[in-house]
Image 1 (cartoon, rainbow, N blue to C red):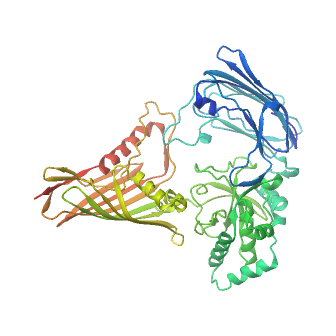
Image 2: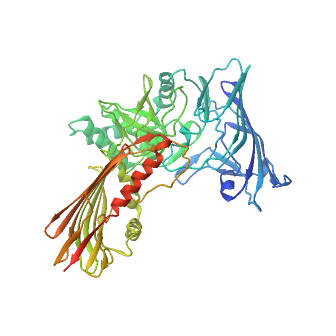
Image 3: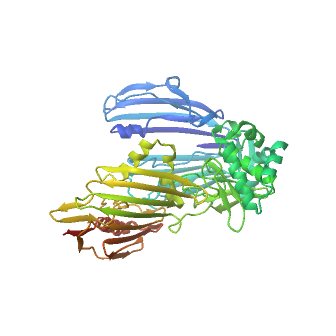
Length: 585
C-alpha cells in the first residue's frame, strides 16, 4: 500500500493459495469489494492444478459484477466483483492479483495475515510506503504470540510472517481480532467521499462528524414538532418524555439500509425520515435525536461496532471505525437507545451493542464512552414448575419461565414463527423427551418489564424409567446443561466466557398415591472461579421440591485453565442428570 496524498492511496495484492477441499475454497473464493471512489487497475485470477499447470484464467472482464445489497439494503454504491468457478479436482492453486487506487483515505486497508481458521501461512508480506509529507499512524496488535518481522527503511515499512500452521477454532475462544496479528493504519488528515477531515484526537474527529455530517440533518417539519410536544405534554420527567418519543419512532418507522455516497456515514435528514417512514441506523437515530431535541432533551449520536463479540473501539489512535449508530441520552447513568428495532424496550440495546467502548459525538467533539453491561445479576432465567408423576412413568407439568437481560434474545425469533414452528422449537430444546406433548403454551415479550415470558401445560409419556415397582426420575426436567466443550490436549487460546448469566429453577414433584421416596441425590454446591452451581432437594409428605441455581461468571482465563473449566461444566452436566427413586407400594 502506498499513501501518496491525504486523499489518494494505491493498493496492490498478489495472493496465492493451495486449496485442499471445498471448505478451503469457500474461504478463498476471489472477490473484490469496491465503490465509486475506487478505480480498479488490475483484476486477474489464474487457476493451476496440483502440478502447477495453468488450467483456467480470468481477466477483469470475466468477473461477475453485482451489487452488495442485502435483503434490507434498498440503495447502495457498494459492489462486488467475483469469479464464478467450480473446481474440478482438489487440491488446486488459486493466484489472485489485483490493484486499485482510491480517494477515500478515511478507511485504509489493514494487514491481517491470518485471514481465517484452517488456513496456514507459507509467507505473508505487507509493504507500507508513506510519502514524506503525509502523517500515517500505525497500530500493531496481537504480535506477541507470533513471530512477525518488521523493518523500516526510509519511507517503506515491511512486515513478514512465515511458516505458520493453521489454527483450529476452539470452544470458548477469544474473538479472532483479539488473537490474530493485525496492523491498523490511519491518517490524521483524510478524505471521505470528497469531504476533507482531520483526526489528531477523538475530540477533533467527533467535532468533524458533528460539523460536517450531522449538523445539517436535524430539522423537522413544524407539524411534527407540535405533534411530539403535544404527545409528551403530560409527561412528568425527561425519561417519561423520552419513552414516549421512542415509542413514537417505533410505531412510525421501519429499518432499511441505505449506503449511497457519504450516506454510509451521514444520516438522512430527519424531515425525510419523518416523511418516508423509514431509515437506516443513522437515519432513525438522527430522527429520534431530532424529536428529543424538539421536546428539550439532550442526546448524542453514538458510533459503535455492532457485533456479538463485544468489539471495542480501538482507542489507541483516532480513526473512523464502527458499523452502526445508536443514541446516548446523557445522565448519571447514560441511557442507550437502539433506534432500529420496532420491538425493543426503551433502554434495551442487546448483546450486539452492550459492554463496549464507543464514540459519542457531541457538538463540542467526540469522547469515548462504554455502553451498558449486562452481567450475571441481570441475565437471569427463572423457571418454576409443578410436575405430577404417575405410576406408569408418565408426567404432566405446568411450567413457567421468565427470561431477563440478554437471555431474552434466545426467544425473540419466536415472535415471527407460526404456532407449529414454535412447537417444533420447544420439541428440539427438550429433544431428550420423545415425544413431548404441548397441550397449551403461551409466549410473549413484556416490553415494560424487558422480559420474555413463557407458560406451558405439557406431558411426557415416558418421563420416568419404570423398573418393576420403582420409578427412576431425573431431578432436572427442563434446564439440563448439555453444552460440554470438546477435550483439547494442547489448548492455544485463553478461555473466554464472554457473558455471565444465572439460571434459577424450582421444581415441585408430586408423587403417585401410595408411593414413598427410596433414594435421593445429595445436595450439592460447586464453587469455582468460573461460576457457582448448587442444588438442594427437600421432601414434604408426597412431594419433592428441587431447587437449582447455576451462575456462570463473565471472565477471561488462561489457556491452562481450560481443563478445569471443562471439568466444571461436566460436573454440572452430571448433577443435572442426577436421579431419585420412588418406591411404588
